Image (cartoon, rainbow, N blue to C red; front, side, top):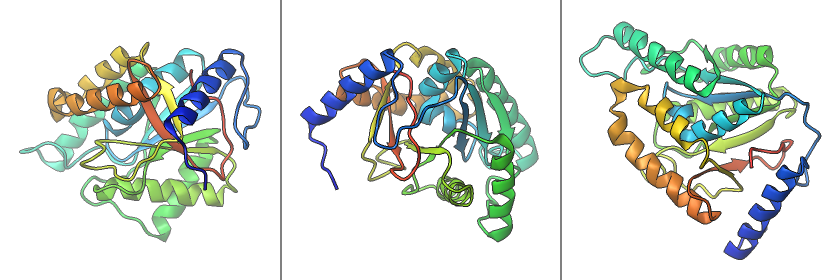
Amino acid sequence: MISLTRRRLLGQAANLAGALAAGVHVGKAARPAPNRLRVVIAGAHPDDPETGCGGTIAGLSDVGHEVVILYLTRGERGIKGKTFEEAGRIRTAEAQKACQILKARPVFAGQVNGKVEVNYARYDEFLNLLQGEQPDVVFTHWPIDTHEDHRATSLLVYDAWLRMERKFALYYFEVMTGSQTSQFSPTHYVDITATEARKRAACFAHASQNPEEFYAVHDQMNRCRGMEIRAKYAEAFIHHSQSPEVALPA
């Protein structure tokens, strides 16, 4: 195991930015990426992908990559006083609006918030869904998380990655670090200074979830991760070292 000092980390970040500017892919496991990547962002609920990596999504879609936001559920348990059906309709519409802002295609995996299952049948179901998308890159929840649905999504993605012979690049994102995601030590950063406004707009599209409250936490995270690479705003990720690596937006 190699420990990353701050000086070494900043040096690697600078090297990464320079390599990306030159169109070079970096990392021991790097592989040539196609001109247009198929990217899947797998989150448990509407607003999870947007908060975890909305700035990166915007950056990827802006340069022509195909981005799919895959929601495990429609957030059916997420609005107090609403039935699961009512909440699902509202949050689906919010997710679709957020995807329009980020220029991504929404896909729903068919599970229900509050009734999420992880079993052999669900593993097969999720595998079939991901195989249909044929991703080059997948971003999903870090598995050490207080929310059971976040953990379930991460496990479903990991199982599909194994059964698809580890062919796609696998990255983990963080949400509400400190209260939900824990023990998250980034390997990669993306400067989202140019796309933070769209990330914010996509998060605020989830009006039923009190975005003024939850985005304040993510604003702090964006700024903190930005300080770590000497940018105004950044998002951080953990790359699975046994997966391929592709160049993320500079």
